[in-house]
Image (cartoon, rainbow, N blue to C red; front, side):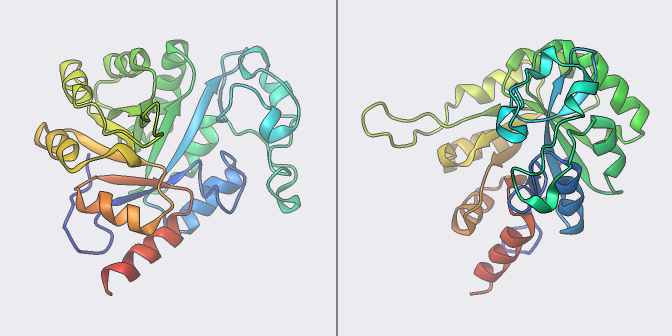
Length: 261
């Protein structure tokens, strides 16, 4: 399911809240997710790992040091250990006590007509557990799965062919100048060959030719993580289906203001 792009009109691109409304609230927490829905984001993106006892938990890093101040490997910890941690206080004292969410909690929060982007940060072992959670949620038609790991992307598409799956890719830099390089057009052929639904790429490497080729190939085309209205309007004009941002309401407002100037 893609969002139709109508050039020059408001809300013509899906605005996806990166780790929830992470500019304002602690990333990958229920506070951040719920705030994103309140701010009328079209979708929310969260990151997931599999715990030692095979529960899917929502966290970006492979350990908890950055967000909880305790160095615990997610894959080697039980959910009882993980859920004792405070992952809100590092953002602001107002969020003290925020726990690492289960994916089921996030799924339960998704309103009708909204979407949830689930980024898998670990390997394929998570896939059967994710399928079970998605099936039980009753919201499988509202879910998109993304990953930088191409083997994971292929496995998800094999196990859940009805679910949109996009391959994540970053932007390369020139070794000498440090300037961003255009995305590799070979990625388009790669995802088409394996039946993957689209690409979710870093905005800086997105060129007009890459966007044109991806869209002409019938792929979904998304970008991350854009907090600059000028850059957001640039990629919108290139025809992207969605923009991931830390500031969903602010970015939408700024884009609207720029369009009417």
